[in-house]
Every structure is written in C-alpha cells, then in structure tokens.
Length: 113
Length: 111
Image (cartoon, rainbow over all chains, first blue to last red; front, top):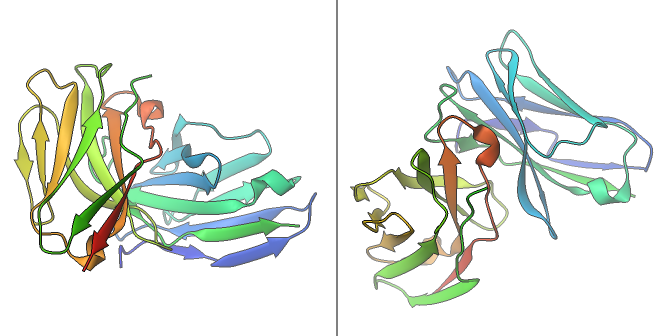
C-alpha cells in the first residue's frame, strides 16, 4: 500500500459525458501527478501540481483539467469524453517538486462506451 | 527528448539473479536514471534511481556505465513476486516534462 488513494476504482460512462477522478496523496506529500495508461500508448504523464499550483504539463488534452485543493487532494476532470479516453488513470505523489521517488495510487479504470 | 531502450521481455528462474538492461545514449548531464516496476493490476512502484554512481537498496542494485549511456537493474534473487513490467526512465531534474516511461521490459519468473 503506497498511501495514495484514488476514487472511484472503476467508472463507466458514455461519450460526451464529464467525469471527475479524485486522488488523495500520501500524508505530507505536496506534489501530485496524474498519468494516463492506455494499451496503445503506455504510461503518459499528464500534469503535476505542487502545493496547489500547476508545475508541469505533459500530454494533457484541452478537454482535461486538474486542480489541487488546500488540503492537497487533487481532482482530474475529463470532459466531452471520447472512446479513446478509456484508460487507467493513475495519481502519484511525492514530498516535493524535485522528486526522486513517486508513490502511485491503485488507479481508476475509466471505460467510455 | 532523452529516451530509453529496453528489451520487450526477459525470463528468469526463481532464486537466480536477473540483469535488466537499459540503453539511454542521449542522456544529458542533469538526467537521473530511475527504475519503476508495475505488477499486474497495480500502479507503478519505485525501485531505485541513480545519477552517476552505482546504487544499492533493499530491492535491487543499479549499475550505471561510466559514460552513462546505459544502465542495468540487478535483482539479486528473483522471486515469483518480481514478475512485472520494469521501466527504465530518465528524469531531468529541471524539466519534468521529460519524464518518459517507455514500453518497459516484461519480466517472467519461472518457478
């Protein structure tokens, strides 16, 4: 158990819909990272937040957005969902920005039908 | 972007050492070498990292070539629980967007 929690575990929704994925980092960790893992593209970095502020952006679509709240939990919002957005979404956390180790949550499996 | 090359799969016998290679010929001076592994149906798990010198921890050892263009993750005694996909990743200390996982090596451990 990494100490990172993600909810929900599974999510099934229809194309065009909007969903919110939630992540609670390990106690004391200030950085949160979001990743997408699909069968054809492997593990892709989406975005990083540090203590409430966006710090780095990866391959995140404009239809996706994220935020980190004062209690350090984070939410990833996915809108206008397409079939290709079906994937595992992982959250990871680390104590600071200059991360050496990231601790990954168990993931949320999103299925868009 | 500096990227890594790993064999798609490897096989090992239980309780024998495993050497997982990684090539990163375009590594830059500020790139750290990280290894993560992903067990089936789980999130990735940190294994080890290094910059220039060889590193050891309770899980594994990391041997880094003198020119830093390749590295090897060493599992000293493979167990069935070590069957996973192993990712060799370069992370630039100052540019997180260069954190690229790649396709990894799927390690199969035979009893």
